[in-house]
Amino acid sequence: MGCAQVVQVPAAPTAKQAAALTACLDDHRQLYNAALEHRRTAYAKAGVSVRYGDQSAELKHIRVDDPGGQGRWSFSSQQATLRRLDKAFAAFFRRVKAGRTPGFPRFKGRGWFDTVEWPKDGDGCRWDSQPGHPSATFVRLQGIGHVRVHQHRPVKGWVKTIAVKREGSRWYVVLSCDHVPTETLTATGAVAGIDLGVAALVTTSGGEHVANPRHLVASADRLAAAQRALARKKRGSERRRKAVSRVAALHAKVRRQRLDSAHKAALALVRAYDLIAHEDLRITNMTRSASGIVEAPGRNVAAKSGLNRGILDAGWGVFLTILAHKAESAGRELIAVNPAGTSRTCSRCGHCAKENRVSQAEFRCQGCGHAAHADVNAAINILRAGLALRRAAGAA
Ligand SMILES: [Zn+2]
Image 1 (cartoon, helix red, strand yellow):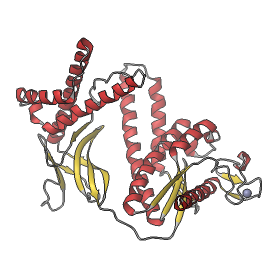
Image 2: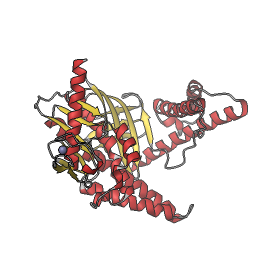
Image 3: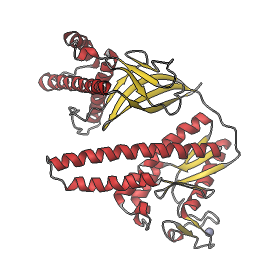
């Protein structure tokens, strides 16, 4: 038994390997574009859909004709690239069928094709290719060699697929693993509700605040500023090109920092609680944009700009996904509840009124006078709703 997990590890290719990786990405990109051209032409001229099977068969000839180019790389990674195009077309036709008018799948320009996947460990790639090495871990990639990776924690389970990803000037190896052993933690007897916010990523019903780390808030600020600067640049200008790459680099940085802080926060929660109730984000996002809890953003740094706020909000989905993975592998219970009213209802007497919410941070019940931190009050309501759901499920 075990579950699936995706692990991303930084890679440290030599200069020669980095050049080979760049060539590998570019050849896969050109393959993608050539296959797309083939499909477009066939569709436009004859109304014919070219299938993945046809293109995969043709790939054999392409490789034979170009041994120093396309022939260098793994047949399987090239097939994975053709399948990626196939998926783009399948999605396109699904949308057409649904009566919408989607854009045709697009050609990938330089810088817009940053991932190559090897669909099976051992086929054109090998994770941990030098297991005897005393201190370093390597991954072998066909046509590139043994690339060193920085593995912070040992990879568990069976490595199923291996991908290489480029982010700006950095390289990563992304592994999807199966049968990752579940580490069931011993029961703590404690339960918690959590409220997701901007100033604090997580607030628990017990009154703990897990803040968005300062460096993440600072990067989100810089990203928001860079996006505003980009909007002012003239199309096609050199300044705009620079601004685009700055936004991309900051995006990547925010993503890394967010993942890191989400991992830490989720781990702490899963260790401490047997059951965690959280808001159902699909509902939260709808109600927040409609009724506007966002309308009174308060004066703290994190909430000062709508754009920055949006960047930090976007971390909730990532956090809950990571929390779900960790809860599953630790045998903890996670319950999603409808967040309606949780921020306006008094956790002591149940009185529900908009006026209870004095400010972003302050809750004061107009019925019983109960005063609390608004997020803690919400987290208690979320926990209560979660426990009620669980009792209902148990009774059914
Ligand atoms: Zn009250």
